[in-house]
Length: 296
Image (tube, rainbow, N blue to C red; front, side, top):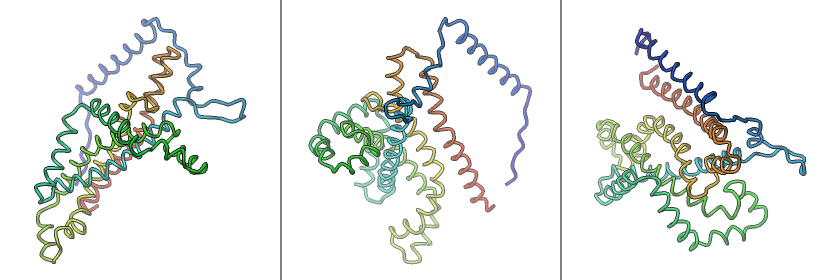
């Protein structure tokens, strides 16, 4: 397929100049008319600090929050893919019961405010299930070496129940959207592929596993990668249940230092630095998939 050439018009130039003027006006107002005393000198300390007692460099509060955000996004993203795949298969199943379960799950999650879901799942999972399973006692009973590994992967022992609750909550929320991605990917495969596989003697599960899913996965990968980026951004919402991720760390620093604009600007830059390279990767992946489909 021939690539179309981009061509700028006078209207594009006018819009660009208007946007540039708006940005300059906003910057002038922030810098000169807000009567705000900007101070960036302490900001690097919140990213990386030198411990005089241990004679070593350590992560600052914002960097620690970034690490929590990464762990939270990674674990909840993996779990969301598992949940979304199972529910997506339910949505495309011939069983009315499975279709009802998958449809109810998607309808409930996607039509409920995420903040309400966070509170409901946190107080139910954290106060009831985690307590009933004895997660706190289980962590403290682990051998010292295993506790060190657990702290590295999940965080401090006293925060693990809340962290696991946040992972499950975020996974259930993101899993509803992945369910629709999986359903759409499976349904996008031509009906003739099912018929050809059936003619070769495959069962429905064999058709799905060997013929349909490999083709659907190629079409789903860009959307799944984009959803993982959304998971990173959506992880900020669990700050309301005191998960010490990047947004929560920014709130704590803002309350302690009153450096509102500096702190939130730095948090914004950190989120952007985390998600923008992933966005470029997703775009490159989509271009590669398009070339693959077009036979190039």
